[in-house]
Length: 148
Image 1 (cartoon, helix red, strand yellow):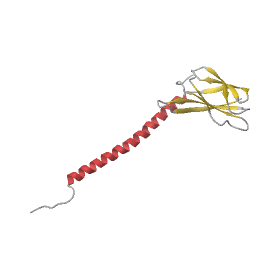
Image 2 (tube, rainbow, N blue to C red):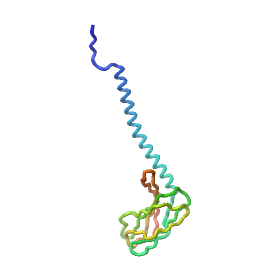
Image 3 (spheres, rainbow, N blue to C red):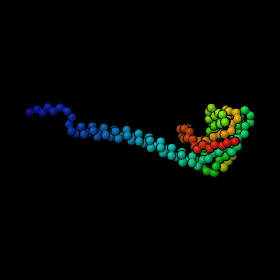
């Protein structure tokens, strides 16, 4: 008698199901790992930012839209990649954020001269220090406001 069975055997079907489950687990792991790695990087930079405080202590209008800004760094923290500044007047805000790259050493005061604040009559500045990761992406820290 001839057996004419069509279809897959139980062993082949079981192996295909196991293979599909392993592929699904691999795909899910890649997604979860990306989320975990990104979250841990953010936690690392947020922790570093908690120790960094860079504040404007004096702002002098040297004519028109030009300002000299004195920045003071607190007593702790890793080196920073730079500082971003945004100027405000009673009637307007500067159109773009002014980037001043470079570290300010701990417990140091630095005066940045000739900064174009892009508005006249500014009376307030927001200063935000930032860090950079290995890919060059910026991670802003807390913002400090100085009224002058």
